[in-house]
Image (tube, rainbow, N blue to C red; front, top):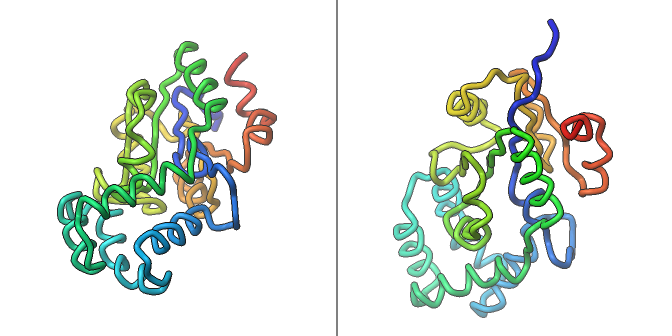
Length: 211
């Protein structure tokens, strides 16, 4: 069966539309955790123990922003406003917008493609990394803490397709983790595993979008 023409490009945020300013190790967010623990003057193990279940529940939208902040501030024995400020600022200090890719995404929009976001975020990373005005230029934005499900659950890909009113082969999903692209491929979406801009822009499937 011949694949249909691509009509929508779906972008991940962390590691794709947003990149680390100064990578310290292979784990995308590990430097963030270390910085937060340092600012709170606690060990990294203490920080992980304090956020464990709250992080997962926030990521999946099982609790609200206020509930997450309340639980964390109690676990970490600190003022909620102070904790919120630390969390947001540390994320902003460690990450920056992938301006080159944003520019390319908006070019695609002008060419008539739908541009969409599909990202796993807990409430605090979303507020820190996705509050810019550029995100309003994307037609649909699917964030795990808002929709109540996360990658690689097939349900979230199906939700995106349903909202976009497109068949899987009419979409191109770009993510930096293979465990997220595989389920998308399984249901028929086309994918590119993102490593960096140079690698993406050389991909035949990507280059074909601009022809």
